[in-house]
Amino acid sequence: MNVAWRRALTVLFAVAMVAGVGLTLRDQDWSVLSPLLHPGSVPALLGAVLVTAAGLLCGTRAWLLTLSAIAVPVPARTGIRMFFVGFLGKFVPGRVWGLIAQMRMGGQAGASKAQMAGTYVVNLVIVLLTGGAVGMLVAPALFDDGVWWMLPPLVLLAVLLARPDLVHRSAALAARVARRRPPPSPGRPRDLRRSILYQTASWVLSGLHVWVTALLLGADPLPALPAAVGGFALATVGGTLVVFAPDGAGVRELMLVPALATVLPLPAAIATALVSRVLTLVAELATSGVALGTATLCGRRALSPSLRKETVA
Image (cartoon, rainbow, N blue to C red; front, side, top):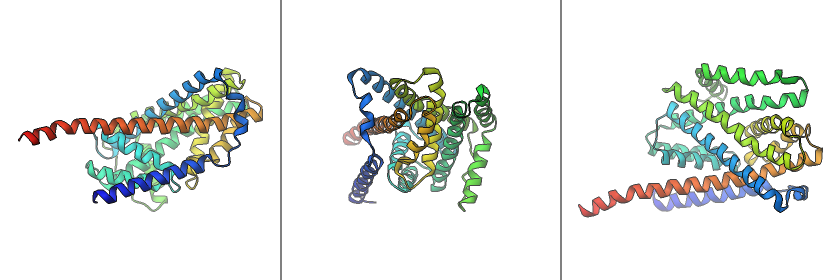
């Protein structure tokens, strides 16, 4: 592919992503955000953005470990570029464009299309299973049945860590249902275990921004923590399954509000869900920009010495 086509496709992808972000924010009732728009809330909201960014970086590490387990280990800057290009594809309706870009980039890094597709499927299974496990934390708030509801997510995570092959089997089953080729068998089970741990940490950290926002609107800290973290994980999993909505727009908010309504009045729960959308969007776009920019800069610095050597020779 020549340089002109490559640049044209890059511009087209960027335009589609911006359009997807616009669709994500369209038709929101921003008037409900007024209780949070005051100087005293700025430090807490900034902290919420930072902890969300930390959660995204844990998710990045989880994907890199899955790539290492299913396909091939790649240099950090290459893997970071591959992840964030695919990640930003979630804002484009259909969500296949990020995978297509990852396949092309993976080919340049020595991974086959089958390995990249397998990495996508296995990573998606890890995201859904760990998200569902963390999402169970919201059960005590919804069903008011004590701490026993905390046991299922712990048991599920323990089983996944003890038997990471179950993740691959689940991915293979999903591929057969979709009439697709099953993913390659993991060559590094240890990396798959670490991916599960990092993805679980990603869910917990990412959900903390909802907790911070709920506290700003008057929620009690202890009951609000599992409702916020579990509710966000469950709502995000639901939004992920709705492929026609850019980043699960509308679906995630609709699923998050009932969990938050157990610890907040309904108007405050709606406001928290909308603020969650804005905070995650800011954190994701900023983190993606910094990560891609840093990876590109490091790549150029690594390339410069070799160019100087060729010039001298």
